[in-house]
Structures are given as structure tokens and as C-alpha cells.
Length: 494
Image (cartoon, rainbow, N blue to C red):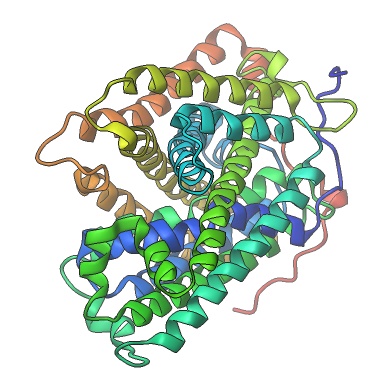
């Protein structure tokens, strides 16, 4: 059923891609987990403005990224863009780094998902199951969706994302109505953002946006690759940034600006559910369930991304060509999807064995599998965004394609500088991000895996250039949309 190496074409609309992007960012997970963590670790009140600032940075990145997506389409977005802009060897390095980062982000989420589902089953049904059994349930659902048509994933994610937005909106309205200190604007006061600890705040906040770049991964499957990716990226990033900022502000108002940092440090991710439980136990239970489906949606979205990187690398021969096979029935990259599912299953088993009898107890999968892998993945993806910005500049320098100076040079340069700064902040605060007390070898090991994967990619690219030149040369310009299929770009006014 899998002799074809072409993904299903013209399936996804702009709305579908927007849901895919937002699902990867997991709005309810950010409100319940990311927002309290940012308040707790940074000790600052400027969390809402942090989301807006990062949203602006990503919007600027999307200018060049979106413009290039109209000329280059490939299921391995970073791979294609860096290859076209900086060369084949660098493209292979970016592809391997992206593949590792997406896998670490996706697999790391199983730790939080398994813990959360096991806790919910125990508290509501009195059924005690190990975290890895609960995680295995999620793995089965994700694996099944991954080998089916992307349309099915889009519909499931669209439904789950709509429920997430609904519950976050309800929680925000309840918070604004309760407001023990009134409708205070204290947490959106710039003085609480422009301060010494802003680096920690930005380092934690950027994780909330990871997955926004995934729109380009679906470029081969969109109805209009010339426009859909850019449009969907702008819409998703704008919605995410504003929604996160508003919900973070509303939560601070509901708890009270003077109490939000202390409450976040005391309760952590339980803050939202504890706060809701005092006002509506039924809604707290619903929110808890939707928190788990939010994680499931993110698992599906990142699984799709990793599967398509396996597919893109297999199709060109950079990795075994079997990974480039596609289901003739569904048009899904079934071989890449199965490969990603195998990786997920192996890691779940390894951590299940490692956690048996651990002194960390029930929190083991959250404090290890989830925390270690997702933070390392966030660093990898931010680093890739910066490299991609440089690739965009290099690519448009050879041919403007009708785009103006802002699109092809100024915006990508600004985003490259800003994203390199954020990557450096993640590295300098990595000990805080993984909850290490004092120096931990993981501060070196986890980011080292990310950088090491890029180095391995560079070396593998050189091996291919020397030993399999037909594969290496075959990477040249295969991802460009033929000029005859392009819609002319109206030059920007200078």
C-alpha cells in the first residue's frame, strides 16, 4: 500500500493548518502549566507582556519565513529552507537537528500526559494505573492518527483546540469577575517586564510558541501552498500571542497581582485547577480532562511534524528510502509515522524501567522525561529558527522574487538576532528550566545532544557528498515551486 512517495495533495485549508499550529502550542497546557511556571521561576509580574514580546519576535520571523514558503514547499520545512539558502550539507545538519528536536518534544510530552491521565483516573474513578500505562494509551491514539489521512488529524485537533479555547475563555472571564484586588493592570505594567529577570521570563515563555513553525511542514498538503502557509502562520501566531497574554493577565487578576507569584510557587501547574475547584468543582474536573486532551492534541501535532521530517529525509535518500514511503490509501507518511511511534514507545519503556522505585515517586515522568526532553527540544527549535532566518536572507539575496527590502533582509536579520538571544537565554537558564539545584551534568548533556545532532548532520552530509554524490546533488532545488505555478508577487513600495 505504500509504493508512492508523494503526500496527499490539496487537502488542507488555511483553517486546518491554523488548528494544526495552535494544537502544537496547546493553549490550555500553557495556561495551566506555562503561565504559573513563568510566574514562579521568574518571580516577575510581567508574564503577559513576555508573551506579547515573543509574539512580536515570531511575527517578524514569519515575514521572511512565510515569503519563502510561497516559493519552496517540502514536508521538512527547516531542511528545505536551510538547504536552499545555505547549502546541502547545512540543510542535512538542520534536518537531523530538527528531527531530533521534534522527537524530543513529542516524546517528552508523554511524561506529562501519562502522569496527568493517571492522576485523573485515580482521583475521579479510583483506578490506579502506572504513568507509563496511561502514556501508552495516548501513544496508541497518536500512532493510529499518524498513519491515517491528515484530514482526520486536522478534524480531531480542530475539535480539541476549540474546546481548549472555550475553557480558557471561561476561566479567564471567571477570573476577571472574581478579581479580589479589582481589575488591576499591574501585571501589564512595562516596569515589571523591563527588568533584570526578563531573560528567565523569555526563556520560559518561548516554549509556549513552539510548533508555530509547523505550518510549512504541511505545505505539500495545502490547497494553495503559495499562500496558505504564510497566512496560517500569521493568524496562528497573532491569536496565540494575544490569547496567552490576555489569559495570563486574567489569571493574575483572578488570583490577585500581589499573590500570583507566591501562589504559583506554592501550587505550580495545580494553581489553575485548585483555583477553579474553589469556585466550581465540576468545571475544575472538565478543565482537568481538557488539559489532558490538550496534551494529546500537542502529541498528535508534534508526531505529524516528526513523521514528515522522517518522510522528507527518506524521500531524498538522506535516510533510508523506506522512510519516504506513503500510504496509497490515506496519503499519510506511514513509514515516517511508524518510525516516530517506535521512537516514542522505546523511550516510554526506557523511562518506565528507569523510574521503577525512583525516589521521585509519581513525579518521576514529569521531572525527568517531560522536563529534560521538552526544554532541550525548545532550545533546538529556537536555534533552528535563527539559522532559518539566516537562510532566508541568503536565499533572497540571490533572487529577490519581487519581494521588498523589509521582507527579504530587514525582518529576517532582526529575527535572527532576537532568536539567537533567546537561544542564549535558554542555555544560560537551563538549570532553572530543568529544576536543577546547583550545577547538573544535564545542563551540558541535554543541549549537547541537540548541538551534537547538528554536527552529526554536517558530517553525514559530507559523507554523502563524497560517497553518494547522486543523492547529494539531487537535493538541489527540488523543493522549489515551478515558476509557472507561482502567483506573481506585487513588489513592495520602497
